[in-house]
Amino acid sequence: MNAHRLQQLKGHIALDNKFTAMTSSPSPLTTHVLNIALGVPGSNMALSLYRQDQSTNAWNLIKTGTTNDDGRCPGLITKELFTPGVYKMCFNTAQYWASMGETCFYPYVEIVFSINNPDQKYHVPLLLSRFSYSTYRGS
Image (cartoon, rainbow, N blue to C red; front, side, top):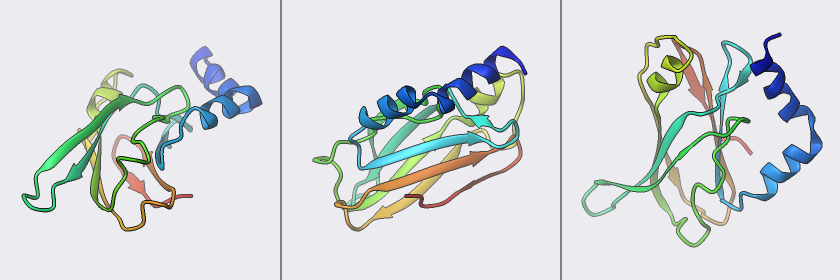
């Protein structure tokens, strides 16, 4: 195993790291990028969160961020700003794969979803390879 993979595994095994990551994100909306081609978290991937304006259908940027070593991006949105509506997460997959010396078929992935009840927690994972992706509403 290479050193990068060992470091990623250490983050999954160490309870202290998991507890810190979970408690530092009070966001009602979370994401987790998983590189299923290599079996590792999708770390250091740029992403943006948008909300669609109901009257103009324009996308308003809420936050930009980068996934951490565990493939997560804590603090996407505060509970106060999380209102019903249509949201979009845009992941810069071309930059992610290029950082590993690879190319990909999908240069970015946009996941559009509706929030009807902002009192619930929403988790939107992205499972990714160079030539495919999938997502679902997680818990």
